Length: 115
Length: 112
Image (spheres, rainbow over the protein chains, first blue to last red):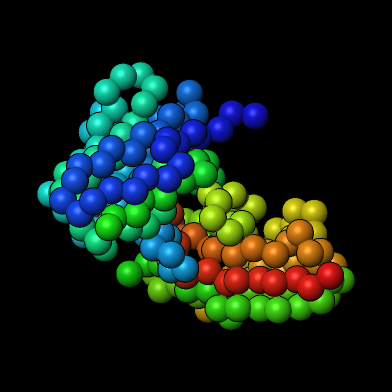
């Protein structure tokens, strides 16, 4: 069964450092998302991406965040200068069809710990 | 905010009992989905119900949707210890981009 894969599973970094989280969405999917979940809290939308550009982003997704799809398979989330409050699980998700109801396929997440 | 809000926040039951979780939301939706999350893992899609549907079944899961009350319920019948997880509803606001928005979830513990 196709799946979304994320790396690394866990990253520990110092405040102020840059972090890149990687995702390989399901191969024939077209729409990609990043969500984050601070421990024990709700799953928060960060950004959606389609056709090599951001389609929507939340207030959380400020100038410190960026996304790109450097090749045909990877989808990355970069945090330029991490803050303590960036510590969370970051989930990548993808969906095949836009504009129609459909399930999101989530990866297992990347746990980011900022010290 | 369009996000759904689940209720209760936590639910503890015995194996074999039914578990009911509720979700309320604020504005018109295209569809509502329920997801499950085992501790420290990714979310897994359970069931989707469209705004023109009132009830849907999948195995031991039964979902209802009342658009007049802007609420949905997820019923898990004959629960098992393996059903222990957090359950989230996700709503997709009608007229906007497709951004499923999640609530805080219900933490379900099923005691063997």
